[in-house]
Length: 127
Image: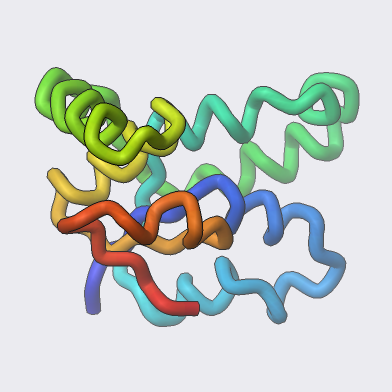
């Protein structure tokens, strides 16, 4: 089994859905050995007002993140992200996430494929 890097869109979808078994994230857990997120995704998940205003939402996120490994931002990722941003003109946070996937050699899954599809070397999982 392989490992995978997950974008915040996949986790937000999981948290919002009533029937978790129908989500992409639920099914990834059955097909992949280890699920990773970038520290940027971690920050994105904590940036909504609801996470701080609703203890239940914060608890659900905390439980979800217990089974996910968070990858730190390192110098090589930072440099690669800068190059990606300069070349493709994408959002810096997305560039950092893409660089993380490329340098860790992880497949990547997102609901926002259009934001990432042009990046050479990024292996986006077709969902």
